[in-house]
Amino acid sequence: MSKKKLAIILPAYNEEPVIQKTTKVLSDLLKSLVAAETITDDSFIMYVDDGSVDQTWQLINRLADQYGHVKGLRFSHNFGHQNALIAGLTEVTGSDVDYAVTIDADLQDDPQAITEMLRLAIEEHKDIVYGVRNDRTSDTAFKRQTAGLFYKLMNFLGVKTIPNHADFRLVDQRVLAAFQEYQERDMFLRGIFPAIGFNSAEVFYARAEREAGETKYPLRKMLQFALSGITSFSVAPITMVRNMGLAISGISLLMLIYAIVRYLMGVTQLGWPSLMVSIWFLGGIQLTAIGVIGEYIGKVFMEVKHRPRYLIADRRD
Image (cartoon, rainbow, N blue to C red; front, side):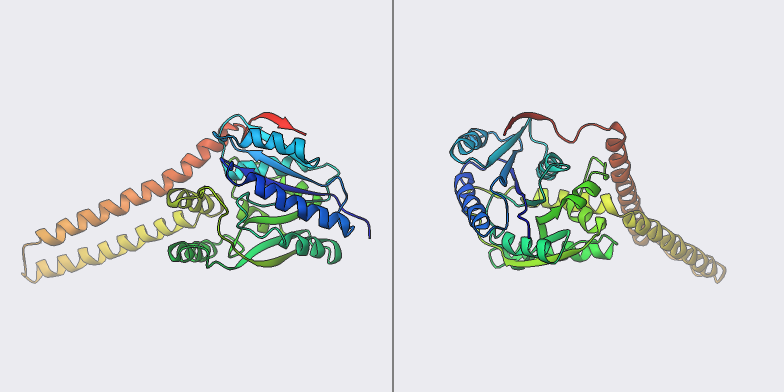
């Protein structure tokens, strides 16, 4: 069995408190995999600095000097976590790298799971191996509940996702080549890779506490991320709004017939409360419908501009 070249790609945004420990942990992992003759000794770690405003980029340069297998890309400004992942994957596509692993820099995803990912890829010929959290006790109850609701909602709307999988995954060059065919600007990676297909497997691990620093996904960003995922992969919200409009129209028609019958029977009554409720209800439905359609129009507006997903200001090889 020939040894494989591995690239570990990490998006980094203001990771100054944790990046040195992360590099040490991953470097030790690479050494053990090299010693086991699983990977080649020119395998490497690549950080993608997503426009950090602290000392993250300076530390990446120092770590590149300290370790011979640390590389880096630096964006011109903050383009977002997903674009940082895309940049790292694009960088190794078509190269001599056999496998690329994406993992966050906060060490909440278990780096030791990479060993099992490689085994599945090499021995069982899996093209994609997903890291799946089977223990989220380190998360708050609110985050666990909302995460579960998110995956159920995505599947209900027809978006194939891997429950409790974030962006910790291994992919081979065949998948990387297919991934480059997806050219949309606003990309939802957790839906893209299941859509690519090929042979896949899952590796389960327990999610750990964040080593240091602050989460890069507060509630506001989580909601934006969920909305982006839904509108990127499904038109079900528009269909639901259409069906709701048809249902309300049907109910209105029945109410009209009821009102005519009551009038012909000589039964009349004041209807101010019901009238006001109807106006407010229908007004709310209309505004919601306009908002849903506007979200899709806005996405089309951003796509047709064909602006770059990111700009690289510096690199360290």
